[in-house]
Length: 371
Image (tube, rainbow, N blue to C red; front, top):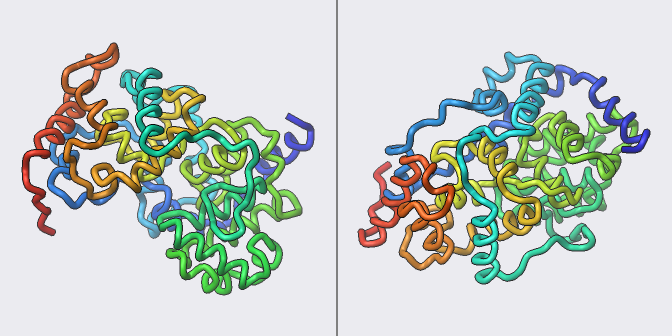
């Protein structure tokens, strides 16, 4: 690490957050980065709540993110940042579920092969390029730009986030004119990105990130993270208000070229169907677990492929119903139920039970839950 990088990282640790920052943190952390187990509409997809044994261990960050805004505000900014840092450090070298054996490296390779046969080969591009007409998720060589694009992409569709990005361009001349955006204030930015969804929360967080960046470094840049280690970059990104593990992981994976396994709602849902994490694990716990279990050479491809599969597969997308045609699910569920593979004997019964019910539902009509 260069002396310049070390100095900037030291400066970030030495610069405590002001009380003003707290007003941006709870809402986005709660809405964007909290445990993201999706609302499940079909009878089949609601089995987890009825049969799974709750996971007792929960990381400090998950506890903070589950607080309501009013309760979060009672916490000091320093405490909130310390809890985020503590959550990351707690599982920096080990999984939250050290005895949970899956996925094995062989299973990761198999999943990648099946998904690439369905959706095409995915590999990291040689050069990161920022699109002029879509937001993308961390797709920019400019780290601050990648962070802002990722926030625009949270909890909305690609088309909506891209529409918000183009609207920013129109409002400010270009969407990375950080000084103009910062000085323009939250109201102007909120109006500019309204078409992307959650504009009030996202505008507040983006403005605070710009302010924090200028306060820490004297300019609007985070490009010093290009030469930082993955752990250093993650710690730095988590120090910003409203930035949680998923957002930070996307910046590491797509902008900084670090081997990190980001877990969004698609990844969390599908890896749960494959039995790759405990049935009731939070999205943050799943991130820490899979980031330790999945080999580095598969992290980029598997993340992109699982997100693509989660959007395209009728059985694996949110609210989908198993019909026995998805090659990915067929390949893994029999391993779970029949105890195939070296790691199968250690699979918890609640995970096996969910997979068995999934198989049984293929012969039953799709009954919708009453609300």
